[in-house]
Image 1 (spheres, one colour):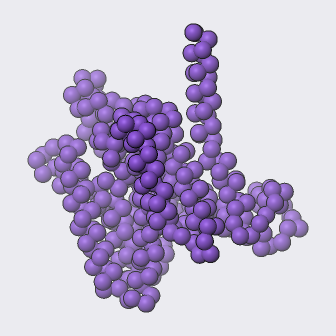
Image 2: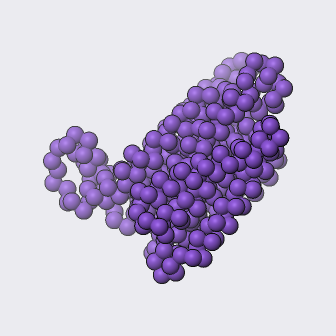
Image 3: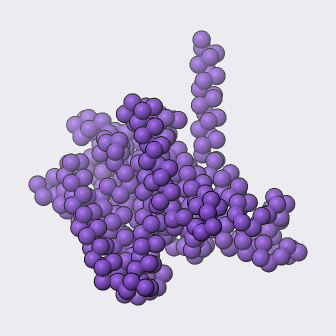
Length: 343
């Protein structure tokens, strides 16, 4: 019996290790997927030549496809998917609600409005990123202050504040779309809101990667406190936890990660809702394991969905459409499988 338990524990450790390294495997495999076929020998030569700054006889078009198109797109997909998934997992633990996602406090709607506003005013990609990030953070601040109406920050008031702010910014997005130029600005706004990694560059990783990495690292560092906060405020106080400070740190880190993701990818739904449930099926409810697993699973999921969007049709399918088509039915299956999402 003891030997069998030891085997089970070893198997779980191996599975957890596989989950953590899976994004690197999926990133590498995505370099071969596309309408321009490449062998493993060519891809490895290109990667080695770029990393060592050595010369290679491989055609320039192959190097561009691998290094300038597929690789930054896969890395950015891993960062965005991991950010959205871990933010959803953190919020679900914080609010003790399995139906909460990464945009519950209005960050997605706020970022969408900021991007739409920048598109019609400036027509510059860098300002679109900046406005999306700033308005995403502003939306969370507004949700927080609405939650302070009664000089407190209960989870119900924060969620209600997020619903209110999301509704307001969604209406503002509709207004921006109404006044936008229907031939140039409106299509750009609509396509951005549907989510895409088509324009991914290493520059985007350098800019938006900072808040995403900081946010994810912060959630990983305080993941044990999310376990305590999910027990309730009274229990957390009894264990000596400053609940207001801890909640603020979780919200700030999750907001940083989500806003950084949304500002470069657009609005991509379902990842912050579905992936944490998959993580609970695999590693359980302990956030010390769930938070890192959500980062890895979210990154893998978005890379795979992005690859599907690139190859299943002649034109690229926006990510928001695919994540909804895949995530909706799969979430129904998860609810049936876990009898309530694994909680």
